[in-house]
Structures are given as C-alpha cells and as structure tokens.
Figure 1 (cartoon, rainbow, N blue to C red):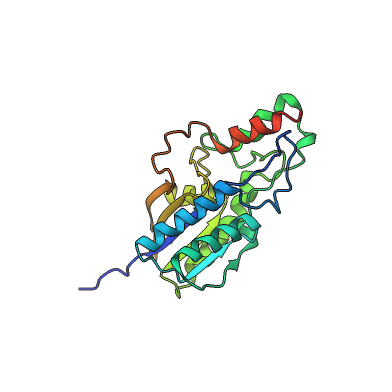
Figure 2: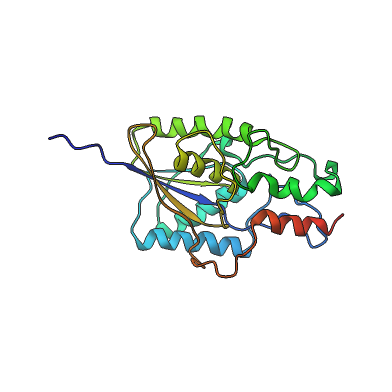
Length: 233
C-alpha cells in the first residue's frame, strides 16, 4: 500500500514592529524603515520559540526590505543557524501611492479598505497598487517555491498584506483576498503543502510569541497607522 508523500512546512512570519510615522505624523520612507525596539524583541521572541522546538530551516526567504532582513537575522541568531537569506523582491509589501494626493474624505478608506472583508481585486492600497496586482506577484512566487522539491521546512519573513494574500490562497484554494486576517507584527503562521496545488493545510495563524493571547490588540495595524498619519494633516 503506497503512502502519500509527507507535506512540507512553511513557517510564514510578518516582520517585527516598525515606526512608519514620526511623532508629528510625517511618514518615514517605508523602503528603509528599521525595526523599533519592540520589533527587535518580537523577532528574537519568535526565534526563541523556533529554538525551543529545535526547528531547523532548509531555506529562509525575505522580501529584501530591511525590516524583513532584520527580523530573519534575529530569528536565526536565536536558532543558531547560519543560513544565507534569499531575497525575493516580488514578495515586497503591497505598494501605496502618495499619501499627500489622497483627499481628507477618502483617507480612512485608503488606509483600511484593502483589509476589510472579501476585498475586490481593483481595490487600491493608499491609492497605489491594487489587491489584484499584489496577487499577480505573490501567487507565481508561491508556485515557484512549491515547485522546488529540495526543501522540507522553509521560513518566509514577509509583510502583513503579502501574508494576507498567501493565507487567503491557502484557506480558499483560489484567487481571493480575505482582508480581515490580522497579522500582528512578529507573528508566525504555519502552512503545510502537499504535491497537489490545492493541497494546503493551515495549521495556525497569527501566533505572536511575546503576547500570544493579544489581549491588548483591539485595533488593526492600518487603523493605528491612520490615526498616526492623521496628525500631520
């Protein structure tokens, strides 16, 4: 009797916390923003969780933006693995437009609209890239990762919107974007993949090692960022 091939494990993280706006609400360049103190602790805490379970990664993939590189580096410092990070730039976060070009009346929807309910493909994030354009980047990248049979356990350190796209694909098996999937900074998701492209198993979502029960988290990342940016208007 033949046994089905064992599924492989994808650990999907969101980078640790960063400070996107200064105290006056002025934006910091998102391409260069580093982890803040909380973000560094979140990344190290995630690393300690992996180390406690003696998890070994065959590959570690980041988007290349500094916040993903720093998070992955801190995780590996805790697990004691010397693995060269692979940069997949197509996994960068959904790209916003010019905040100054968004009218006051449209501002809240521009921040939060891409992360509410079942999101339409033509919905744009902060007046920039659409959800459909994001999926056009992410889905082929995930197919490419799955097509490579040389790994058993991979760590992806990516972004809230990107992770939403990946989790939506895993949960529905189709081209859809579920906006309500919270991705706390520094969180871990676990996905198993089999041979068939529809063979996804979502093991757990949004596990945040420093505060797993997330008692104090009642607003979303984008709601928080909207409140921070509003001060500059």
